[in-house]
Image (cartoon, rainbow, N blue to C red; front, side, top):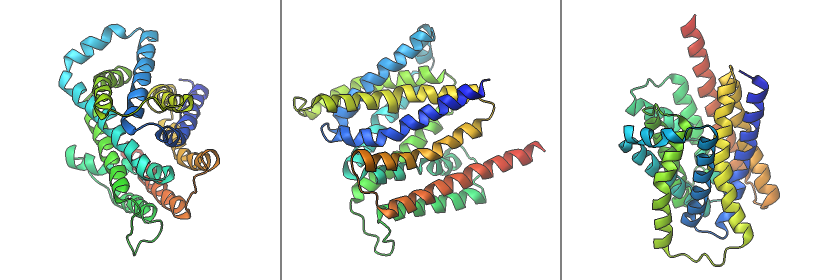
Length: 300
């Protein structure tokens, strides 16, 4: 264990994840969601393949797949194919600050789905956390006008919420995966990437107008949303004895992201988005710290 290295990996991952909402918007200014995902998946697949090569795990890829092909096919269709297509479309329809903040409620969605599919108990604190999180989503979606229940983009809000269902479902499915997480993620990308390329060709979108900035933005998404950053985060958790301390770093990411969105692409951050995000993060904090207390009490 190396706590300094763990902290370095964790902070690096959080800082990189804080930039991706801005990268999404810059890329979607020139590419369609399918084009963006096609480029990002090719890059991410190459990165994960390089990591497996450096870790001398290439020989395990085919045996891992053949041991449970149905799982990896379903996993790849959920993430990256369906999840990112829906998430990118939500970012296309909503301000990035709103789409990102709503997407952060996935952890509460995971708690609810785990109770349904894994028969896990929902605690009183989880109910409070869920109320706070979805109140935050409602504040963001209505821009603070809760009584009117008016949504500028009902489809965008719906897609952002659907992305939380898919991401939570992916992690529930992942509980059945005993394979190395990097190999598992790589297999999902290797399965999904040909499908995504085929969809991009079927879409028949124009690729000729994409500027170098557009290509670089899409490559950046592949590197730092799906590829390298996952590896950094995984190593942070492996290097530490204090998983909760590293996990808590993720709470600063959305606030850094709001600053970057305002400074780099000059997106106006509505006060209701900040209030809603505080509610969502507050719900996640309640859920996480209540879980720690329960584990501590169980050990006594």
